[in-house]
Image (cartoon, rainbow, N blue to C red; front, side, top):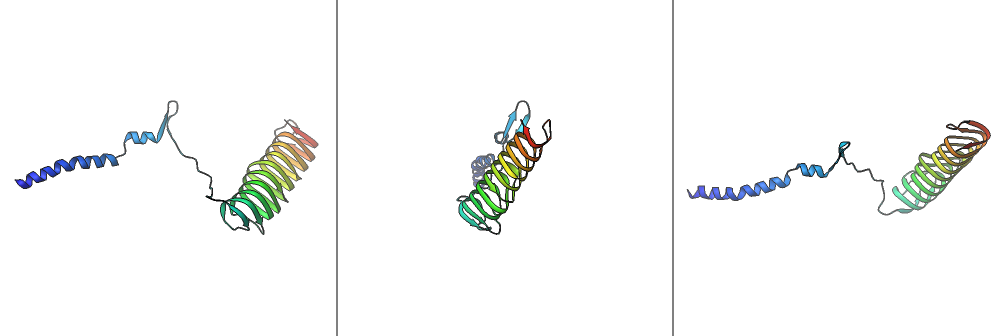
Length: 203
């Protein structure tokens, strides 16, 4: 009889403790609702955080070739024979061939200046490219290309998607243009006069 009383007493104290532990581990509707937002017009909407750009805790100040391999470089990069392992470069690029995701400053690479996303500054070289983003500045070379540019392109061939500024070269081509082109062949694809020799104006 004493054993039964002892077991009953333990059960009385253990049940509330187990219930409290279980309730703390349970996922409730309120917990889920905190992570979701309800739009009256569109119904349930899940919030998803945008991916963050890769940023180093402390940037490098000088790079030669592919060393160091770092997300951020602030200073001088010597691209001999090439440099492709620094993602965000701010400063001066000098050598043969330099590639980065983002660039702010001056690039002087004899063979190619290659910026994948956006560039603010000046590019000097045989082949200058801002493939998927915006160019804010100047390109000077044999072949200049950008997804969009705000500034000037000087070269034998200038190619851009959306242009605001000036293109001067033998062949100038732009999908849209707010500015003017000077060259032997000038093409603005969305203009009323798509092809004009010598001078073409977009507005």
